Image (cartoon, rainbow, N blue to C red; front, side, top):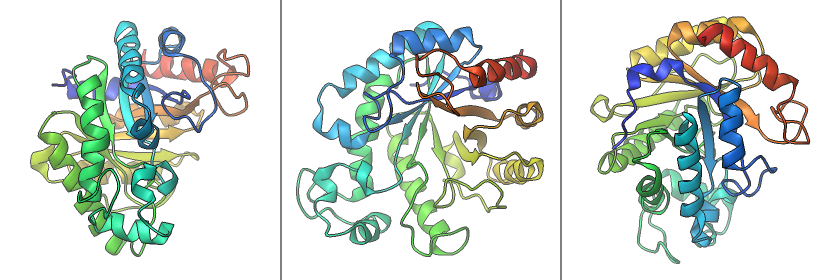
Length: 306
């Protein structure tokens, strides 16, 4: 069971940690033993960790990697939100996507929770395959670690019917969130994260926030912010409050002190995008050392959260 006290959600601030053994299709970042001590020294206490279901499905060593990440986070007092780095069929296991002739046919089956016709998961519904194939093994490894605080469902969900802010997409997302959260609740009390539109929430759109049933709490809404708008954050905060959720900005590259002050006043947590050795808008330079963005972000976190 998760031991984190969710009344402390508002203290969490950190970065999106993208290491190749967690998400093999992204640029290399530093190893867990280096990353978490470096994050701690900068005053970060949260890591958003994308996990790759496709990679897990064919690599039996993946759970040991998760265990190493969780143990290093524990040792450095850094909390972890584990995110299904979804977005399109390319991140899904080939044992599933190979059963469909096109992305469109996969999406149609996925969002109706269709039965997988063949392969490893034959006869299983797609949403149950996600629980059985990703969330259950992940929680078996990291669920009891003190650092574990959240599971983020499909990142920036796409291919929705009538995709957009209103219409069938919201009903479909609600059904998906309800199903996965119910399954997760059979083994864990962890906070489950959800987004809203096919682009992760959008930067400036006022949105109706759909959430699982209240008896399935705790859960959190994740939005992505690449340009700061106080009115948008206020709108999101109202929607989050209306459904009794926690609030979280899971991706941002905003370096404005007022932005973080508003997040803290709303009781929201935040992660910068992203902790990779790329320079530019990332937090590490090409030598995998904190860059000017990391230093400024560390200073702003310190000013706001102490």
